[in-house]
Amino acid sequence: MSDDIAALHAAVEKLLREVTEKAILPRYQNLRHGDVEDKGGDDPVTVADRESEEMLAEGLARIIPGLPIVGEEAAHADKSVLDHLSGDCWIVDPIDGTRNFAHGKPPFGVLIAMASGGEAHTGWIYDCLTQRLCTAHRGKGAFVNGEKVSALTTGEATPVAAISLLFMDMDKRERVMEHIAPHYRLVDVPYCAAEQYPRLGLGENDVSLFERTLAWDHAAGVLWLNEAGGKAARPDGSPYRVDADPFGGLIGAASPVLWDEMAARIDAMGG
Image (cartoon, rainbow, N blue to C red; front, side, top):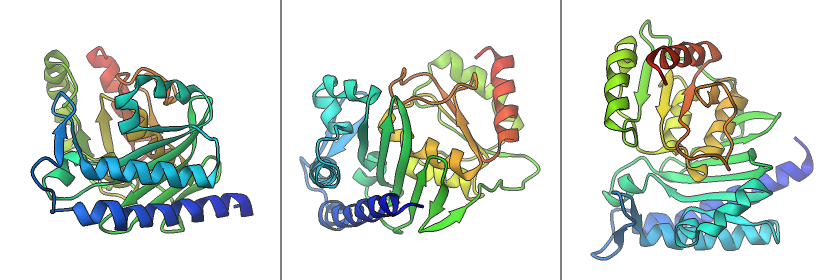
């Protein structure tokens, strides 16, 4: 890895740890009345999300001055922020797994990606409680706490699947449970992409289905899993783009073979 890339990763890692220590963990299991709001559709936001995003934005602006920042909370307040996703930008989820965080339980983490032309090329997935840091740079591989990793399957005879039904319409939920679920051992989804993608790469889960694919939730994870040798892509095989329809669906798998099997089942189901 070049000196420039190494310096970038070191700077972002330092920022992640600082924001976690100052803005996130002091609020963990310590939220007061009024510290949690619903943005609509059972989508909570806490005071820690907003404080974390502000600190991250300030820090990232120091690391690369002038590079646009697409933060989850900034985009919620001003949809025009999303226009930056087609160009060069940072993409930030200040607390991924806010639902869990607000209830005082893990998992939750921070997701940061850098994208260009609609595709992520660098990513960070930070678990605030365990300090596990997953990083990836396009063409350079995937890492966990600085050690290069290769995606592992569970090795179970019946593949392990975490299928998110949350944003599927009722008809699709029923078809998935009838035609897809019987082929897998289903496990609960963690409601946290910062946990789900590492599970796919580190031998805990084999495959996962996502319906809503917002850039701040998936940019870093898709890159990391693909760089590890797993596969994350749209059900039709096209690459995930951060500037595309956020309801295009996504399959993540610990291996290309497992991905192909799931994609074939979805196709036979009728999408």
